[in-house]
Picture (spheres, rainbow, N blue to C red):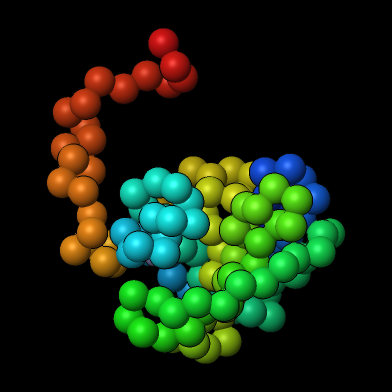
Length: 137
Ligand SMILES: [Zn+2]
Ligand SMILES: [Zn+2]
């Protein structure tokens, strides 16, 4: 995959970042933290080498919490619009987690695994059977 550069940012644009190289891992996650930080039922977690990650602009605030597996996480969020842009996890040394939906192209990443399926709603597996529209009809 070689030199890949991808950029993204928070909702209001105050925080921008860039990552290079292929991700270490991409996961779909239904843990209660991902559900609460996104306000949705799943999060897309894209992990890069911490050294391949850089903020281009923005001052971030941090919040410390305990994950669903009892390890510590420090989140990085925009103080203006409160978007969680990324995080650092005790369970993932040397890596920077990026919230997949914050990339300028959020369709880039294909998860390799699903975690915390104990809180995954059953209807997610039935998505293809639900009527779908490219935008709101
Ligand atoms: Zn923002
Ligand atoms: Zn999660």
